[in-house]
Image 1 (cartoon, rainbow, N blue to C red):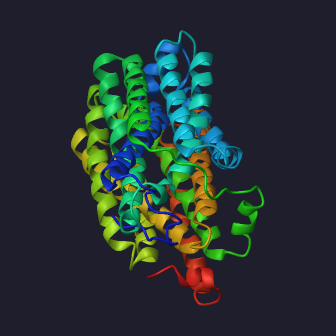
Image 2 (cartoon, helix red, strand yellow; image 1 turned 135 degrees about the horizontal axis):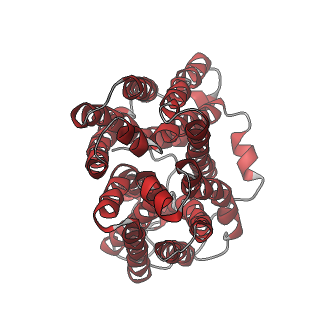
Length: 408
């Protein structure tokens, strides 16, 4: 996959070897993979957690809503508040907090304890992701920055398309508490890797509170990119959060849900690489293709009486579409604001996580009020609106500098 390098790096690796720099990149990637897996893990475990703690599936969706909302707020706040602290220490603290919170969830005897742990996970996710987006500039030589940034963001995508299915499989075979504990241990492993493999990363450039609205103001392409993130992610998670009860309602054996989500994950990785090959020259078309694909597949799942075979085929298509989302929106954001990549990325992290929470909340209300299948129709209605966000930028092409960087 390819992510455009919007600005020349401020420094090189600063005296440590390229090998150590790449080991540090891999440690950060493991950290962001474990964090995003932790945030999305309840998607595949709503039913067993709800049954064990005696809460409805709609209320159980708070396990996704709470960290999403907290991460949306903590992304810019942590970035600003820790502006003078060594980035290595901040990232290590955040990943350690996530590991401890997941272990607390694994031993929780009530839903309130789980929600408290999910709050802490939201702080970790927002702060870590916002800082990790630009850390490659400080870890590897200039000619490796683009590739290293792509690897780090690959951790986000891999968590979305593989972490949840793997966690679901663990939960199906060993119980949901084991799944939470496994992610907690993975976080502690990532903590150890960062402490031993990352060099000190003293702060260099910081973001002030005024930088965020300044970056957004007058930038039509950036606003369109944030709208695209919001619509695609909200629509996806409105439906995807309740995919397990939807498929079980169609008669699919609950023991096979983890396998189907793993199929979704493999397809998602393929979608990521396909999008990575397209976004450099066909960014608008790729965004439009994602919108149409997700819309059609959600409608197809809603109207089809899904079996293991038909559900698997539809999840392959769904995975291809969603797997292309993170690299597409991140590339759009960086191209829209090449002079302020950290501020723009922080806004995108907020939009991404807020949309996860909004999707789970909206889907939960629909499921509890109407029917499980209603989440699919609402999700499809949101994803199709992306067409209008992309079209608005298309009409503005050439009108201002921020729109000229969006190819296709």
